[in-house]
Length: 236
Image 1 (spheres, rainbow, N blue to C red):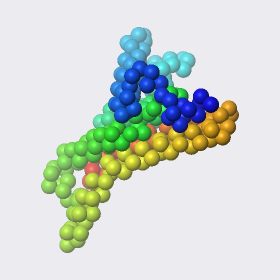
Image 2 (image 1 turned 45 degrees about the vertical axis):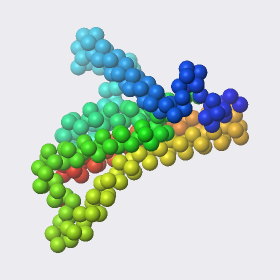
Image 3 (image 1 turned 30 degrees about the vertical axis):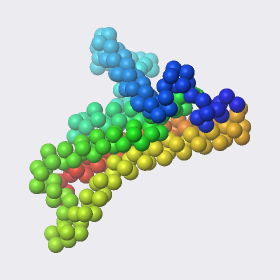
Image 4 (image 1 turned 60 degrees about the vertical axis):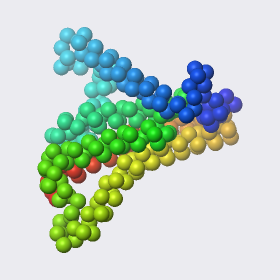
């Protein structure tokens, strides 16, 4: 029954080190940030030690794994952003890694993912909101970007403008709630089925949880790329 206690939130390893429940998402956010820094540093050192950084390692290594991940993400973002995907990869790639690692930590018994708290998800979404609007203004100028909110027909601008503003304002909330709801839902399913059969069934749902971790990171970064593409597009 120890597994169901962990999965249902009845016990947390964070309590053993004196972390309050209300502060858990802040603590775990710091842990995720440190893990990403350590990962980036390890990959950087592998390039420094390589005799020729352009030649990949023969066996599967951390460096090869990160190169494969970056190539896949670039392929995805390039389909929406073209060559400008390289400019936005630092933000979009970091968001993907952060959300995935944050979600993954929630699969470890006794730990809680910071993404099950809106106070973690909303700041990330607000950063995306500020980022794509800033890039939209940079690409089109303030006046040109404002035309995106007015629609293609000038005499309907009075109707389109408030709809567009509301749509943009709700984007950060939509990103936050989608991630929050899916991560909490995944934990609830794991806890419920773990109580029914604590030996075999939780293993199956841990695998499902890993898929959810990946998909939520993918969706969050994918939608962020779409918002950047819409803000910088010249098709309006």
